[in-house]
Each structure stands twice: as C-alpha cells, then as structure tokens.
Length: 298
Image (cartoon, rainbow, N blue to C red):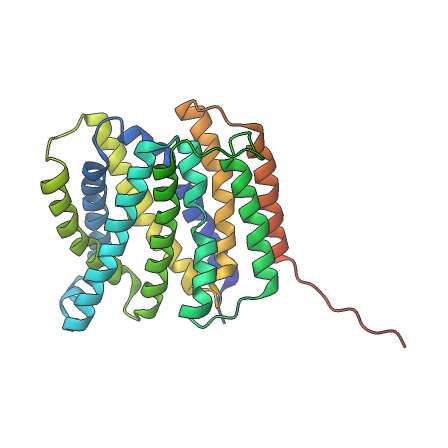
C-alpha cells in the first residue's frame, strides 16, 4: 500500500522549495539572458543528479540501457529541462514575477486533464470541481486587481508562461510511462538536454561569464528548482495511486512564492491575490474532503 503521509511530506517539501524559484529566476535574469541561465542551472542539476547516483552506487546503471531507452531520454531531455525552461525563463524575462508565476501553476490542471486520455485515469467529478475552484483562484491572482477587465498587456509573455505548463505536463506523462529508475532517467535526460542548450547558446546567445551574483542565483536554481527538488517530487508521485491527489497541493506554493516576490523583489501584491488564495485553499480542501453517502431512511 502506498505511503500517503510520506508522499505528502515529500510533495510539500518540494513545493516549498519550488516557491522560491520565481525570485531566483528574476534575480538571475538581471545578470544574464534566459538561455545562459538555463545552461548554468541545468549544468548544476546534472552534477547533482550524477552525484546522487554515485552516492547510491548506481552510476554504472547509466551505461546499461538500450538504444530505445537512450532515445527516450533524449526526447524527455528535450521536453524538460530544455523546452520547458526555455519557454518559462523567456516568459519571466518579459513578465513581472507576480504574473508569470501563477500562470505557470496551471500545469497541474493540464496534467490531470491529460492523464485521463494518455494514462487512462478516470477523471472524477470531485477532482474536476476542485480544479475549477483552484483555477479560479489562479485567475484572480493573474488579473492584477482588474477581475472584470483582465487586459493582456504582454500577450507573448502570457502565451509563453501558459505554454510552459503544457510542456511540463507532457513531460510528466511521458516520464510516467518510462519504467526505469527515476533518478537515472532524470540524470540522462538532463545530460542530453545540455546538447540542445549548447546549440541554443551558439545560435541565440553567447558564452560570456556573468557576474558572481548571477552565478550564485543560477546555481541556486539548478540545485533547488531543477535538481534536488525533482527527486523529492518524483518520490511523492511514486507513493500515490492517482496523480491528482498530489497535483492539487501545488496550489499552496503560489502563496509562499508571492510572499517572497513581495518582500525580496519588492513587487506590490494586489488585493485579488488574497481572494485568489482563498479559492486555491478552498479547492485543496474540496479535493481532500471525503463525501459520505447518506443512508436512506426506513
């Protein structure tokens, strides 16, 4: 039987670490472009994942797979970290963190919806209701105090932030179908992704060394956003029988993330953020609440 309590512990730990990502992105992007940030942070994450495998005495496992499995790792590496972070980091270079962050958090909605046809998971009405409630909260946060007149001032950035959620959800679905050990899969996919990132550096950026503060921020992202936290999240997913049980918890993260954004980046948090947070919490409670059928009288 899956250990649900342990799953929630790992998931919440990952969510708390991920809540600091938006601040890390914006700080790092002050010193480098989004492609350089992806190159440094993904390189750090590769080192971390390989060290974990070495510590677990599983490093040799990376050289035992078939051609088909290596091709799968290349495909997964193209989706994440390359395509996902290329799109997401570009969005953060365009939008305020307060806007890019909640739009990216729509990925659990897409994950649950895509899991129905691709993973043959039955989408329960309760899950659908919880998703709608939580997504309403995300909309309120993204509306920036203008619920009825939501004006899109940066449509390309909005498109990128939302599109990154689709890429992320697809990565998790294809990753679930691959039955190899999770950390080994991540190590290979992240390693292969460096090939695509280097090509992007050659054609669309350069190899200039950024300021030391930028390197520190990029290293932090590589460790806590891409490397170590992935391990925690994958561990949580392994312990539950339905992805939607964990996915809804991700909606806790925007509250903490917006807190860091306000106090560290000095962005003004709108009143609709509080309203949106209420809907997010309501969606989580609704998802976890167990409805009991009433016994007929007589």
